[in-house]
Length: 269
Image 1: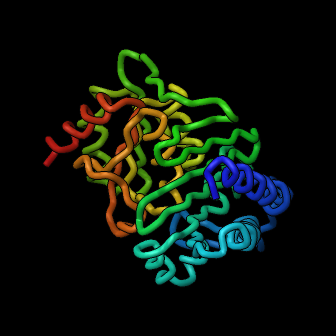
Image 2 (image 1 turned 180 degrees about the horizontal axis):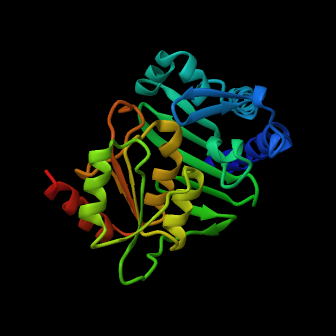
């Protein structure tokens, strides 16, 4: 199936999930509809319902592709192994769940298509605004039907959104000490469906991620790279969804900003 036709179908499926499985629960969740998955990580009935809908619809769209969903993987980690050797949909049914459960934006839906570890297409939907971003390998990046080109903020100190959530106290202090003199540090949105568009739209210049799980980053990394930014491991190696045990990644609105931050990280030893 050629990518433009596929994109239209995927967008319709994602909007259906948003409208039917997610938004009806926004700001109306009961305590019984929120479960803790891990410290500082929750899952809601909306996540589960959205993943069920997305899995059914995407499987019908491309029957030859497996579906690797965040919640299915939480229940059975072996689901991830499919990313190594076959065509797979990668699904984050509700990205930004902590925000959603708190009754605030941003949150969205992320879908990617990968083959043997290489991302072919990525789709990002903001549930509240309806903003739809997508990219295909070699086909560029698009926002609401318009070609997207990554644009740095132009601020004297590049704007850096650095995730500290999964760092220990010593690591947090090291980041603050070594990065603060060179960058204007801002809070992360705790939502990859928002963070990657910010890097393309000139709101943020840089992001540093510790966890790089495929449902969080497959779509966004492709989108940023196809827009002319740079998203890769700190050592410069490309992000692959089948390397799900690796950690650490930099997203930058330009290759030059990427190289500068990667050098500073390397200097930390």
